[in-house]
Amino acid sequence: MPTQIVAVTADSRDDAGRRWVTSGEAVVLYIAFVKFGLHLFAGRHYGYFVDELYYLACSEHLDWGYVDQPPLIAVLTKVVRLLLGDTLPAIPLLPAMAGAGTVLLAGLMARELGGRRFAQGLAALAVLVAPGFLSIDNLMTMNAFEPLFWGGCAYVLIRIIRRGDQKLWLWFGVLAGFGLLNKHSMLILGFGIVVGLLLTPERRFLQSPWAWSGAAIAFVIFLPNLLWNVQHHFPFLELQANIRSEGRNVQIPPLKFLGELTLTMLPLTLPIWLAGLWHFLFSEKGRAFRALGWACVVIIAVIMVLNPRVYYVFPTLPILFAAGGVVWEIWLERPRLRWVKKVYAAAMISVSAVFLPFAIPVLPVESYIRYSEWMHFQPPRIETHTLGPLPQLYADQFGWEEMVVTVANVYNNLPPPVRAKTAIFGQNYGQAGAVDLFGSKYGLPKAISGHQNYFLWGPRDYTGESVIVMRGKQEELEGWYANVEKVAAVNHPYSMPYEHFDVFYCRNLKWPLKDVWPKVKNWN
Image (cartoon, rainbow, N blue to C red; front, side, top):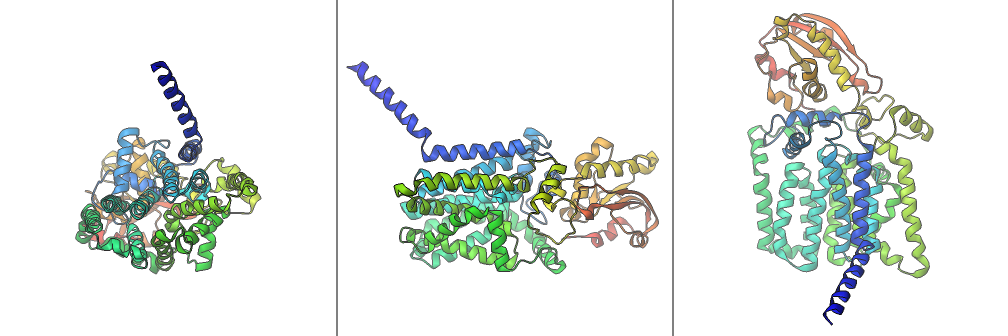
């Protein structure tokens, strides 16, 4: 008799294991592994992205804030450098993991909304195939981690609504606090959720002491960065005002904005996230979660008004994919419609494969250029800079080490006594960051710059008597220095056109460098 019991138990476990292998949770996990593997396969065939060079520099100056971002990205970059180094394969590992996490979150939210296997799998697949998520999850930037914080907060709110466990607001506060340390746009999510709650019966949650405790936790976690901003007179606000006044961002009317959002999320996912929005706002089964629907509407509206960069909306999409998966699972329950599930999933994968080279560098650069010409397509622009043969996302990964080699040739040809006093001045954080990353290999000191947080790091101990200036104008430099000589040129065929420039060797600054340093501030 005992032997029979053991046998039955073992069989039951085998059956349970087989069922799990084909369960919704397993399908989501498979898709997450595919996404992670895809980013590892794509690797970094081009080079370091310009923002990554800056974050690598920030990781050497850890602080509670920076001119253009909170501190978390610098901390994460520092962790990667300590554990894995700063090689090209190491830098994108964390964002690839974050992307896989976004897939998992989409599936978890679909399950919490009542979705079964197809709903969970469709939500996860929508994240996988979206070119926008493929792009941001391939670079070490704040954008790769933002969907985790937004989706995590949405998942907690869904659980609070479904299960009534008000203590979960504490976890909401933790996620929101660290989300604010990642990117200040977390405030937009918070504003959207508050408005959504106020517009629905769930406004009762705002009377809960647990909700206010969660808000207090978020505030305490964010407080060091807030104090840093107060101490430095809110440089981020000054930066945003400068960007608006210079007209650097491409202005996108509402309809075009929604069109670009549809394109970057893959047009075939449009019925999914529109169904998700409909589910939250209008369906009877989604009534309990109406606050999330209003939150998404408010978030999209605020972003379109304040700063119409399409990728700012990306973190809301996994929430809508989750709800949309639930809707489509219900609509396709009829036996005669079940074939649509596999066909539509296959179509999403096939169309995504067509757009894949525009999202991540799976093709050699020359092949990419030929492919884009054959397709007559380029990704939507987000800034007004003149472009070369590559879109900005790719062009900003080329030419950095070659630029440093050019500067090193100038620097190393100076007499040793002069070399020790010579500063290398970059006009932007990409130039300065490239010198900081590659320079030691070529005997260069750390760079100085007036751009973003480099300005706050100051001129080091340089006096201005000997300076190599990247991308300057001779007539302007002659107003600052007694002697100005053009000594080299930088012109990589694939880099951004504004990174094609002359290099100048300047001597004898007319004023002490520390005195004129405030005039080099360049926050844009």
